[in-house]
Image (cartoon, rainbow, N blue to C red; front, side):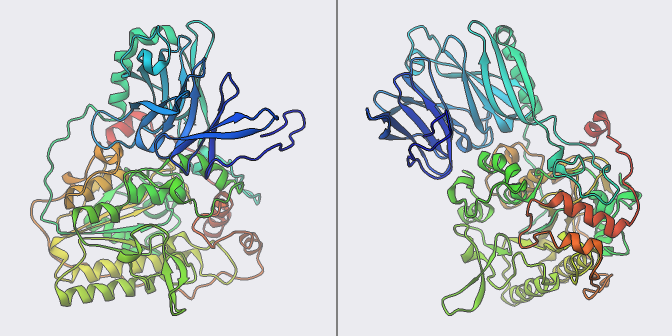
Length: 631
């Protein structure tokens, strides 16, 4: 509690981890929520100018936005990751209703209700649905609204489209008024090949940097026409989210195994922009065929995907998107401040746990074998004091290779490939290979031009050869005929692309994949939907439930020829020089974690290291119609 006249702290009150919403009732009762709990807390004045706790109410996991009705008799609490809004009777301190806010079908996660407003009558509730890019409209019953005039039935009456990721809303005006919506990601991103070409570091808000391209917007809608037009507006929301598209049964080749390989932060143009059969910009290529020969050869043999877009802007979101098909509102809302070096959460614990779980969890539910190589692993010690890799994710350590390195740019990706191939050989002997494997190959991230570190070319060549060795070993094994490999970047934040800053590298490798350019739209959760379809796993959220699986890219008959790795293109021993201006700039970069919030500067250093004095070309935005045709 603060003194508003001078900002002095008068009292500190325990709420729970990551406090979020605070509202004050007419009688002085203060209600508060915390992301890291499942409760809202009431505090009342104690008569001495302080507050005392007066009760806690279980209001759903990760309660965030709070709203009181005019009299203070009803408290509405949003549970973003479960698509629910709890309604609390503030007198009895009990939940008297739960408003359901999911899509028409599928898991109860993905709408992300995270802001609330009541219309002037108090009988209609507006709910910002961040991941539906919409505002839900609920007509409340008298009991739920706390007013006799209400005539609704607590039903979801419809939805209103808005822009990307609405995060706040209010009703302005005393009578019919207007609905004001703040859209956290606004109109979204676009191509990002343009930017500074001098020696000045790029600002974190630079239009070159994918996170810096997102600017909030405000939508103002007059309330009175919304009731008349609500059915049509709802259909627009359903169409925009793909909810009105049939979900026919899909057939896959007889796959029994999936190898899912995650890499770090590259755009399509950076790696494959020099392939003439795809929509690439050769001027933006960082790692051409001479540096990444296997990426190019694999794309040419098994298919070139030039319309793959990652769901994430940065790795904070990229790894959850890639392994859980969803990102919590906690992670989305704290990422900008984290990447601006204004926040250090450390272990966030439950607050960023998706309700739908993680890949290893849904594999366990299905009863299929799972093996993790590197994902979320951190350095640690075992009981004997020996160095091992550990993870804080529940249930992951017991299905992980604890010798396989997590984030450590001092290690060659060949170390990682050696360990994976050793396990493959053991599987060959036993005849059993895990049905689902998650493999992290992070060295395409590079260390920029940090003095004494491998050059960006060496890092990428190392990553290229490690990937090729894994694919080659697998293709020469007994498991090749029943395995599909998906290779993608967790995000595309570390580079330019002339189509969109989210466009990235995707490889789909199996005996049933064929040469040719695949122009259809694909994103991260479409890949997850494909993995789920192949292995019979459940969906995480409405993103993969309503996804566009890649069942159409497989041929009817297999081509069992193995793949032979092309030689390492650049030796790991090629190192950045000392005592250069670029090395001095790179010394300011924190490379102890995958993303340190310094990515705009990192991108500028990397561009100049590879492109020398070449300026960024002018931006060219792909027309929306062309993108739609690409879907």
